Length: 199
Ligand code: VGL
Ligand code: ZN
Image (cartoon, rainbow, N blue to C red; front, side):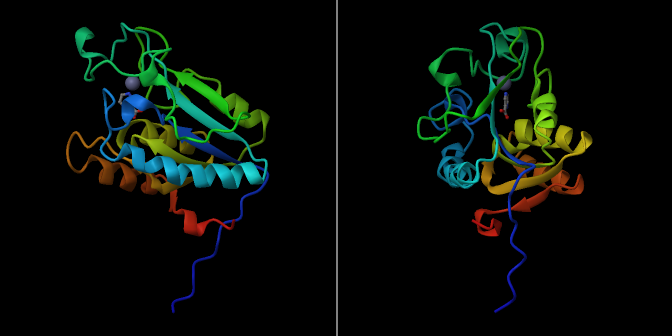
């Protein structure tokens, strides 16, 4: 058997970032990501691992006003989704987010969109305050909010591990998700799966 790759040990300085694991991005939601629900059980295992080590967990959420500029009624590309305080904006019911997880709401005002969890939020400041150096990023959608969150994370100097088994793409064009994964790797994000974590 080929020698297994070096396992990754997580410890102080690491944080788990869950991107937009919200009902509207799951099957049955208004902007359903194909197989979006498949990320939840996998993310639950990453959550358990980070929780067991008392490492910080952040969950971003799209949190739009009803008249958001990204909605078709205003000339945007998307159907209404993740309207603040609605069921569609809630985290997936089976996502085991611990009570201590930090919630980062984004794109909360009518005239600005934000695909990145860093855009218009205090995510970077909060990570810096905790001297976080490495981010483990998964969630929805690969080709929008995961991609843009990872782009910003790399630009801001974080080491990034992409949770390749816990992301799914919208794929407006069939290749979008694959191209997004390639771009994230080009930017230095390292794809990993659960098996790579030393648990
Ligand atoms: C997203 C489209 C519109 C995402 C958010 O979370 O990837 N995609 N708003
Ligand atoms: Zn949105």
